[in-house]
Length: 485
Image (cartoon, rainbow, N blue to C red; front, side, top):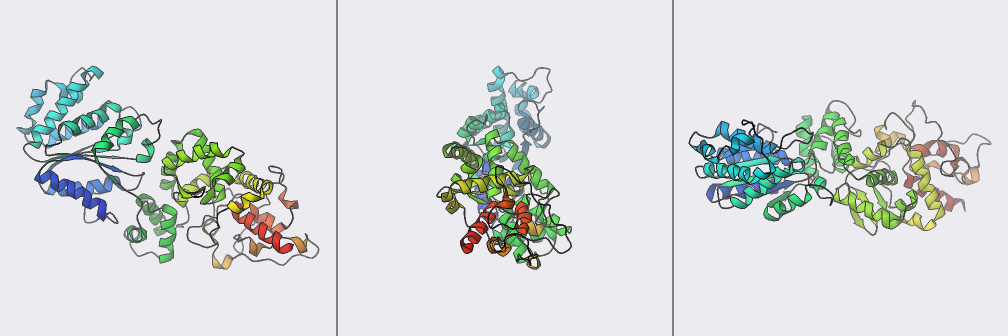
C-alpha cells in the first residue's frame, strides 16, 4: 500500500476517488454506511482506498484495517481479528471500555481465551464486535477497511453484513474490496454471501486506465516520458491495468522489451486462469490461436464442438472478465496480455493452427467469419510464434520492425511451383532479422493437413507458418488463391 500520498498521487481515478471522498464527508458530518470497491487483480482497489482514507484520518477519523488470507491456515474471523487488534492499539482507554461489557466474546475472538468461537456463538461475536465499533463511533468517526473479501471466510462476511445493517445511522464507514470476476460465477461459495452486501452498498467498480492515465503512470514509473507509440502499445496490451502497466514500464526502464510479458504479470494472469472451470481453461488457448478477436463458430469448428456448448463456456469466460462480447458472435480478449499468456501456455500451437486451417477448408463460409486482421506493425498486434520454444522476439509478437517488413524473396531456379506459390508479401508475416536463425519447418500431417503440399504455399511460407496467427495465414492463402486463378 502506498505510504506517501504525494509520491503516490492517484492517476486516472478522479471520479471513483470523488465518490469515496463524498462517503467520508458524509461520515464526518452525519453517518456512515457500506462501500464496496471492486475490480480485477492489479486494478488499483487498495491504492484508491488507502489514498482516500488517509483524508479521513487527517479529518479526525479512526481508521483500522484487516485483510483476508487466501493461502489457507487462517482462523475464522481473521480480518476482524486484525480490526479488533488495531482498535485496541489505537483507541483511548475509555473508548475500549466496551470490551469489558462484551462478556469475553472479543477476547475469545482474539484467541486470548482458551475457547475458540463456535458457530453457535456467532451472534454473540457479531454483537460484541458491532457494539465495540458503535461505542467508539459515538466519540469520533470510525472507518473499517477489509481488503480482499473474495478470500474471506463465510463467518467474516456474515459479520460484515450484520455490522452494516446494525450501524447504518452511526458514524461508522465500512469499506470492503474484492475481485468481482472471481466471485461472480454461480458456483463460487461466497457469491450468495456477497449478494446482500452488494444490494446494500455503494459499489465503486474500477476499470483500466485510459491512454492518458497509462502515459502518466509509465512516466512516473520509468522516470521519464515514454514515446507515444510505446504508450499506445502498452495501453492496448495491458487494458490499462495499473499493475500490468507498472510491471511493463519497469521492464522497459531496465532495458527489456515492453513487448515481453513481465513475470509478475504472467503470475497474476495464470492465477486468474487457474480459477476457471476446466473446460473453459481448455477452450481459451484454442481461441488465443485465432487472434485477439474471434468468432464463436470458427472456434467451435476448430475444436470440433457444438456451437451451443462453446457459447456456454464463453459466457463463463465473459463473467470472469477474460473476454468481452463484440456482437454478431464475435468475442475479444480483455487485453492482449491475456491472449499472449494463453498462447504461451500451449506446448505446440502448430496443432491448433492446423486445426483452424482444416476447419476453414471444410466449411468455406467460416472464412468470412475471420475478423479483420490487425496490420503488421499495428499497436499491440500479437504475433506469437508457434514454433519457437524460447519466447517470442518483440517484433514477432507485436508486428515486424520496419527493417524486417515482409517481402518476397528471390526464388531459387527450379524450386517449388512458381506460378501458383503463395507470395510472402501477401501473408503479412514477420521475417527473421538479418543474422538470426530461421525456424525449422513445422511438422506435417497435423490434423490431416500437409501444408508442404497445399496449393499456393511455397517453402519460405511453409517455414514461416509456424509463427503466424492463423487468420493471417488463411487471409493470405485466400488472397493468393484468388490471384493465382
